[in-house]
Image (tube, rainbow, N blue to C red; front, top):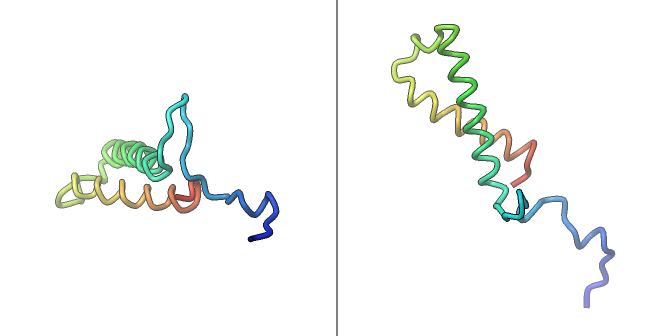
Length: 79
């Protein structure tokens, strides 16, 4: 039998997040936030006309989505 205190049994990493009574895995939430941040970054790149320097902007959008998802999943929502 393991003798653990209550604080040790509850880990800091959430196993699911409840949003409006619907349970979602933290990686899904991180991916949604990452995609939203990528949309904002893409709009800023388009507005400042920096996206014209990219050979294939949709691939840059996918890369930004992955980058922001990893950053949000690592630092904001530990998935």
